[in-house]
Image 1: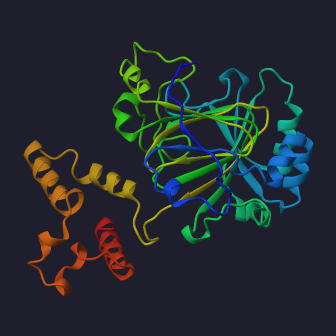
Image 2: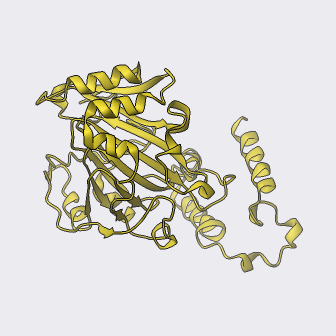
Image 3: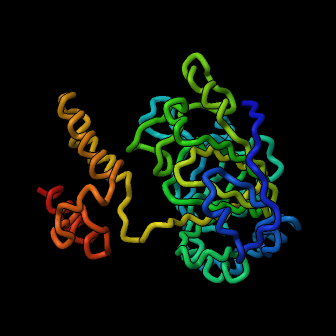
Length: 337
């Protein structure tokens, strides 16, 4: 396992319904010590695995959940197969109560099969859970998910939304990198990924520095966050994070949210469209398009378009719900040709 000296800054005194704005606006990750320690699910986890099962199932309505099952020899790593044309796990549908039983049956197994239930909607699968276990982020309309597993390792990846993740049962370790370390993390494919986001191909438990020499530079910028039950972590948008579940039963509840309006599009969609339409153009054309993107997007200044009457600015004017719908309609029309 890699050694990292720098620790994520710890913030004490945060409570679930009064998270300070300076936390939510931070450009660095923060450990929110004891953020969820008052939640009943945390107290159940400190009691026993059986108590966790009892507590969760009182909210469960019987739907099947998506689970990843990995062989014991994978040592918890959720990853590709050797050819990178598939994955080292099977994706199955199962009832939550059955999955919890399997986790409990393997509690004392020194090398259990991996059981990983990722990003499952709390409101859909556990209605009522948030009445007793929740953060005061309602004004940000967060997407709230639960993650349940035994000892697992999720490769370093990034998320576009802001993220507050609460480790409610078991212990977790996050290894985080600022986004500019992307080149040094040796990122895999964009469109075939274990869980939707491109991931680092480096095995953090056994890094191959001959194959991935620049990973040594990434480690110089890494930060470690070790979370106890009830601790939270704030992860700013676009920060790379590698996640380890360190206990025989681990449950995390996370909140993804944005400061931007809901009608904003997903930037990754623009990336895929640029791969299709710009990446393989001749160099001089790519250079011209780079200037165009800088002018309209990356170096956008409203005053640069003051020579166009506001009512005639169209897509380069203020982005409103109505304007966003018109842009989407134009894109759909073009992409469907």
